[in-house]
Image 1 (cartoon, rainbow, N blue to C red):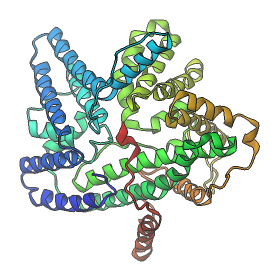
Image 2 (cartoon, rainbow, N blue to C red):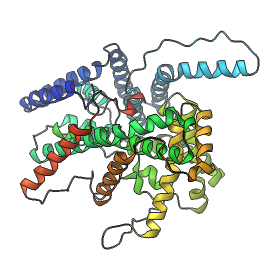
Image 3 (cartoon, one colour):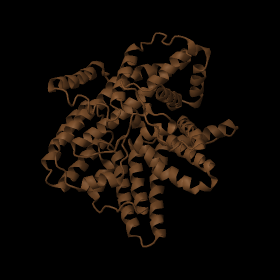
Image 4 (cartoon, rainbow, N blue to C red):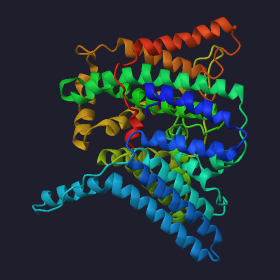
Length: 482
């Protein structure tokens, strides 16, 4: 069920009405929320519900077992079992065919025949997101950071929470489970803020992302026919498509959660205003980045600390290789992750990895020249990486990038493509984000102090833009495939 679909437009008001009508009973609220979440998730295919339920029960039991274990050895054993179960599940459903195909191609490349065959596997949507939630649950209990919940309904609702199960944010148990266990009182201001954030998310998805996709898809799907200047424009449009598609989903997920009285973690913090690649990753897909930092990079960095900066560089590259593989079963994702890992090396060598650079702007609001140059450099590096992310294969990415760095880069882009509308949308969007960058989302405070007539005119204008430029067909969110 897509957030930007008619079924969800019917589903959400019904859930909202029933949910708050039983607000006096937290248990009943959670049971209803769990049922609604299972219905939402099972809307895609009821068969995938079975794995979600099994995973929930396994990790619920493991959490209690870890807490009750009398020795650290037993705690570690139960934690390891949970990690193995979660990783094995991911490998089978997401990567089994990928590894089989890779080994088959490797054998054939050296002249060996193989009888390896791929499986007909239904990949459960959102499995990467809820599996990481489950893994953090048992790991944090083992580390003594969190006590396991005895409330299986609250725990199940945490795992299956419908606003964020499909594409995050990946909230930690110590953030979301306590909210499920306490009484929720309807907060009008929070609900209105949630509606505003949902509207902004819909605008980003349906006006910016889906219209950028039209241009980006045409260029990437026919990249051999275009000049370097057109290809770089295609990469820029795809970068904005991915960002507004995914951050738009996150805004809608956070907004829907606010309607139900919950606060989810912020998942994007204006990443295109980053001034180095570490700053970019502190702003991009924050819930995943922080998860990988806590459970992959930090343990590896501690393990390899005797190797000094080399150990840190190796830890960051492994961290981002896993980040790439998490996104999908294709070597392009792994290479994309390694590419970002290597971009950290200059920061590690200079000791600038953990330094935060303040965004400096002139009195009239525009960024200072030095700040702008740093932001443009980071954006360029990100755009080049997005070619790897979007390309069908490594060979496709190489051909695409090679043509960009050719004399055809200095020709006029276009070749019959109409980029004017998309460029205007992007320019206006960046301006709104720039002037709203201090807020949780760009239009959080925009128009709050205006007279009601002007404020509602602005919201109506966003609705008009969505209705005017939305695509006739439902376009799934990009991160649903991950």
